[in-house]
Image (tube, rainbow, N blue to C red):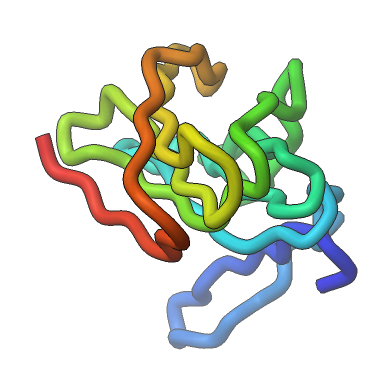
Length: 130
């Protein structure tokens, strides 16, 4: 939605309801979205910006707000994101450039670069376990 993150809740009747203030700003050409394992933080890969947008979830309302800082610089053109099952790491894969697999740790929603590695040409999806 206009390059942003659309946020919805599910009512007790099972209907989707857009959250006030949605959509939220994101970078250019958002291509993937993932939540951490506790559901308190959301990350969006912005392919053209080369960034990952970072959001916090307001659990009492279901609302979402940008964290500070609002973005982390990624490898060139992040395409897909995954969170490992331990909840300790976020991984980003890129179609362009090398290295094209980047791993971040996170604390209080904030991403910190951990490591990166080349994977070959043109990866477009990622899954993670730990």
